[in-house]
Image (cartoon, rainbow, N blue to C red; front, side, top):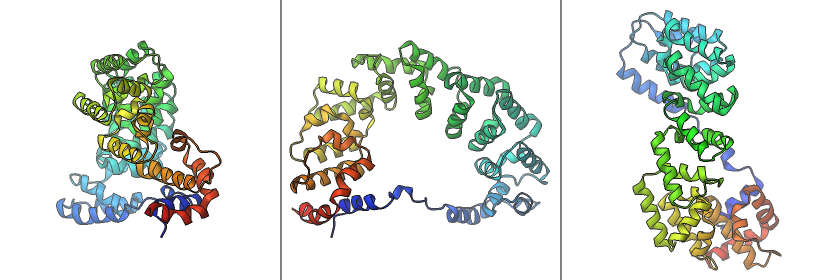
Length: 380
C-alpha cells in the first residue's frame, strides 16, 4: 500500500486540494442548541416573537428563536419591527440583517433615535456608502453602542488617516470591528507616530494594521520597550524586518521569550547564532517550542543535514511539518535514490517553492516512479 504522504501528494497533483472543500454546516448544531437548550431555560414571552419573526421578517427558525429568547422582556414587537424596517431602508440585505441579529439580538430592542440613527449619521458624514455601513455593522453590531461624537467618529477618522481610504477602513472593520472598542487616540495613534519616528514606513505599518491589528493596541510604553529589546538584539532599525521583530517580541511574555532562547541554546545555537537568526527571520521565534523541536528532530534525522542548516535558514521553523517538510523531503529522497533528478535543488529551494510549483516539478513528472518506489523506500 502506498504510504499516506506520497498518496496525498499524488492525489494533490491530480485533484483539487482538500482545503477547497466546503466546511461542514453548523445548521444541525444550531438546531440542537436552540431547540434543546434555549427553550428549556428561557421563559416564554407573552407575545410569540419567534412566530412573528419567521412570518413577518422571514427569519430562519433558529435565528427567530435566538432573537425571541433575548427579547422575552418585550410585550410587543413594534420596536423590533421599526429597527428592522430602518435597516432594510438603509440598504441592509437579508444576509446583513441575519448576521447582525445573530451576533447581537438585543439590537432589535435598541432605540432608533438615540442609539442607531446617530451612528448611521456619523458613518454617512464620514463618507461611507450604504453598503459600507451594512458590512461594518453586520460584522459587529456592538459598534452601534459607541458614543457617536466622543469615540466613534474620532476612532474612524484616525483609522482613515492611517489607512488612507474608506475601503481600507471597511476591510479592517469587517474582520476586526472590535478595533473600535479601544481608545485609539491613546494607543494606536501614538504607537504609529513612534514607529514612524523609528524609521518604519507608513506602507509597512498599514500592512500590519490589516494583518496584526491587536499589535497596535499595546500601551505606548510597551511598544517602546519592545523597540528597546530589539535594539539590544542588534537589530538595524532600517531593516525591513524591524517591525516584524517588535511584533514578535510583543507576542509573548519575557519569561516565555527566555524559555525560547534556552531551547535554541540547547539545540546548539550560540548567542551570535541566536542574534543572527532573529535579525534574519524574527517570525521564527514566535513559533511554539513544540514546533521548533518537531522541525529540528525531523531535519536532523536526515542525512547531510545538521544544526547549521537551521541556524542559517531559521525560516524553515515556520514551515508545516506534515504538510510541507515531511512530504517534500520524502519525495526528494525517493527521486534522488532513483537517480531521477538531473539537477538537485537545494533544501532551501525545496522548502520555499510554492505548493503548485513543487507538484508540477517534482511530483507530476514522476507519478509512476513515486508510486512504485514509495513502499520499499519508506519501509527500508
